[in-house]
Image (cartoon, rainbow, N blue to C red; front, top):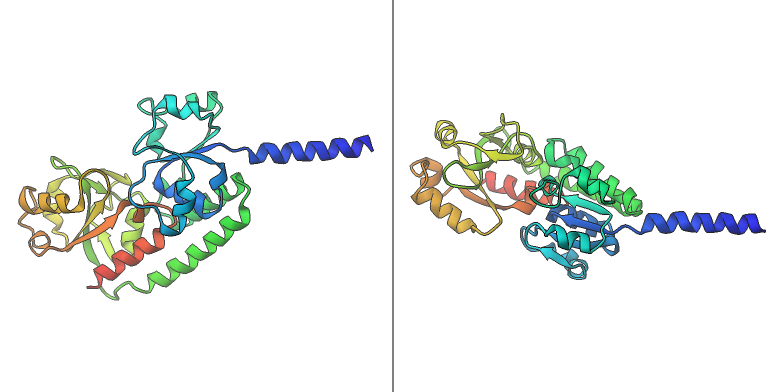
Length: 283
């Protein structure tokens, strides 16, 4: 009898230990993944909200403390006694929450989505399934993956036939444009939508490009990534009035498409992001 009791106590201890995740999510796309798979009770803080949280997730989101609009301070982060961190990879630097080694030494397990630096949609599914296992919500994660697969197959059909548009995806900055590069999900989404990113040979997901390339390639459409303190309207005004590409046909003819950053990130909005661009590319 004592052995049976000990076995039950051991099983309970293992299950309890697995359930006690205290996660901080420092990107909107990972936050929305965690909320979508039902892991919200194990998330103790969020940051880096690019735009409005998805309506169906808002109630869950509002129950979790928002630590900062951008990166939380190291002091605030550790005051919550976290043991798991996910979000933008840049958070694990000396400038913000410390290096991976430092975080691990302080008892914080770190997972950065593989899909941040890949063009493979399948990696988004793998990230979601990882979170499902980590937070003990495997079934929910599998259901979300199946839904995304179906949604992406549906929106792929929106792509215009025999038509590929040259796309300049402008993120920010004036002296040298910060752009969507070739090594990330955003580039793959542009491709699936029927476009060809003029910086698709760059080895970064988002990074610094140059105005000379934009002038040389003469894009058909300009995707303007909307987030942060500079509004979509302000970015367009700069491109039209003060930028080196103000005389390009696409600029003169207002061939701008507003795409929120959350729709170009490797999360639950990926199908909607493809749909948004595919429909606009067909106009």
